[in-house]
Image (tube, rainbow, N blue to C red; front, side, top):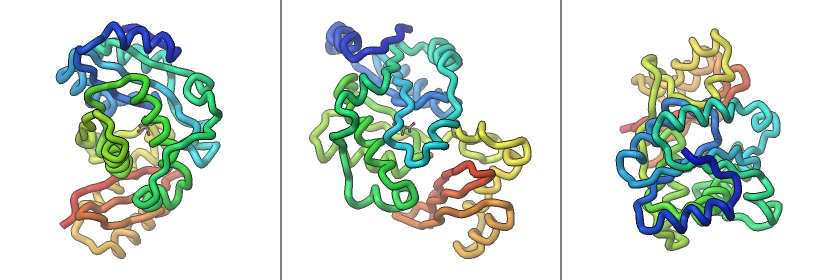
Length: 252
Ligand code: PAF
């Protein structure tokens, strides 16, 4: 696996890849089984797999969340090497934002709901960085997890709106045996928190009403940010020990 830190270097490599099929997995590091499932799919479906590790500051509305984001570059690199990734792209802020974020991609509808309502500017940051990464990597297929379902929908919309020739591949949520959706942020939970966290998925899936679910979550120790049904899916975000957990399930 080759590690690339600059856009110029990546462009040279991109030229040499030529017409071979490229799969791309954008990440912010802190890699776990969820990311590795996307990488595995990309390696199986493409000639070349590129993974980016870039902790994108523009999508964090909470500075503390950015500063405490659990990621270790050497661990990530080792995992990607073992997963047969061809190129790891790990740029710096000055590489990615030579304009210091004067220009951005904005969506004015879905991005204002759910996570967007409580994290102002979050999806502008996501769409902007993914647009930049797509323009650098020029992949055929790009892989995203359904845990961030809203992000996935917004990226699908962006690719369509800007006539980008990129296939967005949705990958199912990877869960612990106890149902907890795997996330880098789970690492911020205490042992006690990790025992409580699976209740989120359990409560989303049980037969109770939305009002009852909210109460059940609060009784379990969560502070509910939102619990909303949209397009036959139930979406939830809730804080546990100040860690923001999200999940979504089908809802009939
Ligand atoms: O899902 C993530 O990890 C990030 O939002 C992404 C897509 C890598 C953009 O920074």
